Length: 270
Image 1: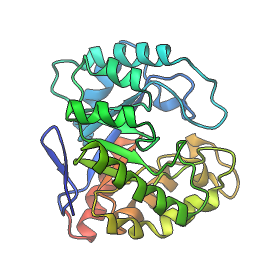
Image 2 (image 1 turned 90 degrees about the horizontal axis):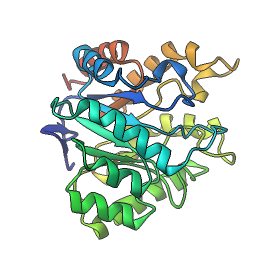
Image 3 (image 1 turned 45 degrees about the vertical axis):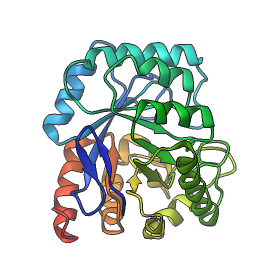
């Protein structure tokens, strides 16, 4: 397996399972508990690091189905304001955006990775990442974020990402199978399929991201809201670590750090 290194932190290749803490600068977020107001970004990031986060993933746009749209300029402004609070702190930061203009704006700050849910569908975005020498986290997508409708298409989209990275000259990246209801033609059945077959994403030889935190499928069968999905998130996370997850993206750092600690002992990755 090829490792990915984010600000000196090796991910994959048998290294310890890493934890990515989520900070949302978007009040539209599907999980309101993850929204952090301007002026509080540094405090929340420092708290997450103290609780076990290796990397902080900052996003300024909700991509949940039905979220109200915002302009690219608004996303860039929100993200830049948040990043300014972290400049010079040394905290490893990933930026969660699929828009070139937003990423370019973020490059004026201290960032250490790009999290692109469109999986380099835009070649111009891949060029920006390559030119900046950033590692990337890339979600299984063909043209739009999470546009696979079955597990076979998920694997095909991951293969596309490998090709796109080779063409763009990006050698340090993490693959994200793309769990979640990204658009109306998907169902939660695919999320369960991805989780059941997660280890089948390993043959690409790249570190794998597991991002299930409080997502819709975890509320089944009775439609529990995000605020009631913590225990389910932690249970599935433990199983995905057993199936080969190298980095966990979560809203709940304290609890997830403990799950990683215990599950890693079980699979001898402590």
